[in-house]
Image (cartoon, rainbow over all chains, first blue to last red; front, side):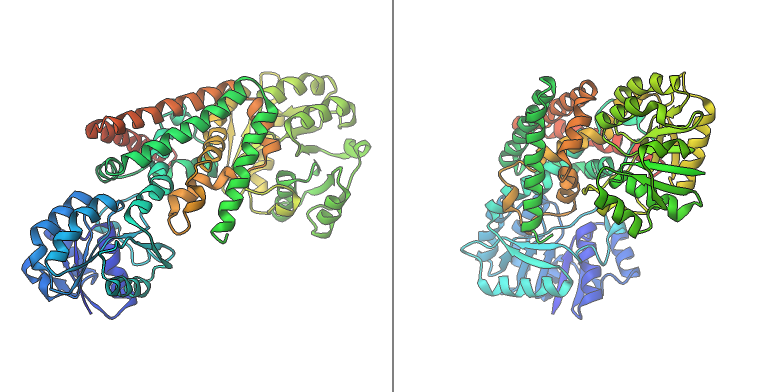
Length: 281
Length: 281
């Protein structure tokens, strides 16, 4: 199979390296940054370059672009992809991407599947890409009623070949609601956490809990601003919910209500244990 | 040196195992639970048992008890410790403990140092104690103007022998203010995080950020209720601050203000990077 990757950033670059490491497929790259392409070739993350006109030579095209760039690339180049070929995106947000590119690509005879490889790092760009970034990760696909089942099967097979731990099927809307909680809220809370005036006083006082709560505050603000705004309703709901919960704890503390505080903490512990159990941990 | 540990829970048990592993000091245990003592002896975490009347035989007594139990044990048994010997506690809260036990112990001729070994796990009790729990941890001491310097030196030496990565000196009040942010707020936020109605829908959708944000929701609610209530003013301030920050992000989302949202995220990223740099990371 011949695969092209458009955009060799953290995700595109890591996919290229994983495909080279774990499969025998050919991988070719396209990036607007020539230095990135040179580095990818030098590190043998790709077998060669391709230009946009060359995309028709590929069975699968993987778009490693931000949401807006993903949409505009698809709309501008719908006729450049191979008829009957597969195009997947890798955006962290699905409904607003899938709804805008699905029909134009279908009209051009291209089989499109919205995808989200669930992995990341606190760093961006090809230089930080890894050939094992996806080893324990989920690969989420968000087909719609218009998505050809053959494409879902082929993409699923490819994801397992690449090394993903599991493939999960969702709808674009369900994906976005859940991701608002599992990923986007985590980044918002972590970013808010580090804004305490206490932050710079804590050398020697931070145990694992502080490191965990603040790790993802080191984020790429351009990408996340775009992802958050494209998913703002579910995300606003999640933020409002955690604010309301935090107010419960604060009220229990203010009124020195030990039983209430203990009940709130117990409820959280039990939920966490149930969640772990449901995840098989 | 002969060391007694009163209370062989997660912290007391881990200290016993670390002392046995890393030093040549004798370690004896006291616990109200005979099964715990039997297990500690069987696992050679201690060299033997002691009773309360035997505490006068020890150079150092380490109290591995919750805050209220620490205070009552010291007040009831001040005369049982060796005159000129050292007593340390291991509570996660310092001002309310140190202020209540310091004078009675000094009057009994005992050198007391308030201490906080900065480590923990999502599990409690001797069964989960580890001989390497403190390997990368800070050992915080909170001496006051009344604390003999000799005791601080000796306890610091012992902490390094046990295997702590570094000893940090603070005041009880400063410790409590900082710990409200680095540890207590982390547990409150993590506990609040898992209360979203989205929690049980997320199999396959959780990447590292979710795991990190929710790990410490699995907490011991008895211990943490006590610690939180004893530190409620700084903790309430921290909760109020993060609520206010979360409201900023929500407002930027609601008004679809991309520049404001990006500025909030950028500010968080830069603070996190500065914090990492100040911690030498």
